[in-house]
Amino acid sequence: MKRKNKSASRRRGEILSVDTYSLMGDPKTRDLFVYDESGLGIGLYTSSGITVHFIAPNEWSGSGSSSSGKRMLNLNRETDPSTPQYGLHIVDDAVSPTNDFYLARCVPEVYPTVFGHPADAKKISICSVDALQWYGAALYSVWLERALAHELGHATGLYHHDDNEPDGNPCLMKFDNGPNTWVSTTNFCTTGANCQSQINVKDP
Image 1 (cartoon, rainbow, N blue to C red):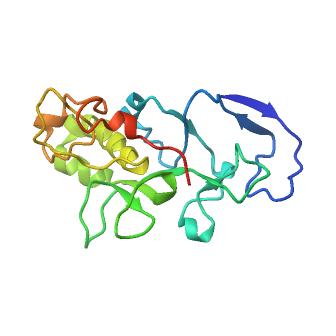
Image 2: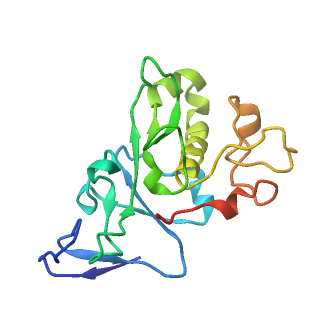
């Protein structure tokens, strides 16, 4: 990703403008833009083959619901706000809501939950305090790497699939509550459900 200097003036119709530079991507790669508010990283989502770019608060229109014009960036569509690109928001919420316990979740923009592309994901929530208590310090970092990849998978169009598939087909999108099966899983499957081929970073 190259940075190209630009003037401080804003072009007509821009949703967002970076004052000192714009980002120029490689058309041969698939790009995903992430505002990592808490510095959690993306864990094992690195195995997806997607090029992830971390953005600063002034490089998008802010976190929150897309219905209020949030989470939009125009880094590759500076003059065409009718087709916005959405960034993903990762945040450490520390503890889960009292009426809805979870350790990690891709919070959907609307319910019932539908995921197809980044515009559908309001935020990726990690509850680090709860997770530390649940798994303990020894397993927390192992869990976090996989939880981030799993929830980013949801945010880019992936769903859970059968935990009962043969052990020879491990996948970060298999839903399992215990570490015995996921501790050795480091990537998205390329056979069976073939999650690797279904990752979608393109907004509608």
